[in-house]
Amino acid sequence: MCLGVPGKVLETYEIHETLMGKVDFGGIIKEVCLAYVPDIQVGEYTIIHVGFAITRLDEQSAQETLALFRETGLLEEELLTADDHAAASETQPS
Image 1 (spheres, rainbow, N blue to C red):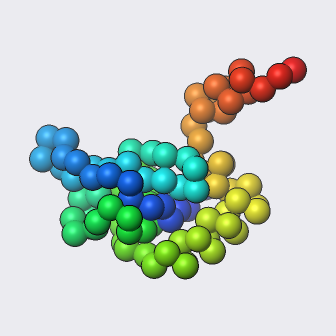
Image 2: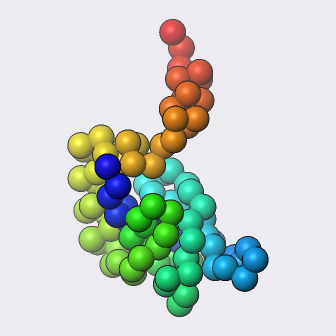
Image 3: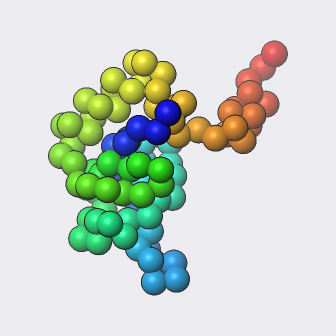
C-alpha cells in the first residue's frame, strides 16, 4: 500500500540542486524530496508520498492522521523498510 503520510520537516538542504530534507513521521526520520513544495519551512508539516512531499498540511491534521496511522499499524508498515524491520528484531531480546 502507498499512502500519503504526514511528517514534520526537521531540516532542508540541496543535493545536486534538488531540495531535500529530513522529515519526522512521529519518531521515524526519513530523507525526502521537497522539490514539489519549494517554499516549505523547517517546522512545517507536509504529506509525503513515495518519498516526495506533495503538499503542506496544518499541524492538527498531521497529528490526527499520524495518531490514526499508529493505531492501525499503518505508520510502521508504510515507513519501515525490510532492513529497518530486520534491525529492530535484532535489538529485541528473544
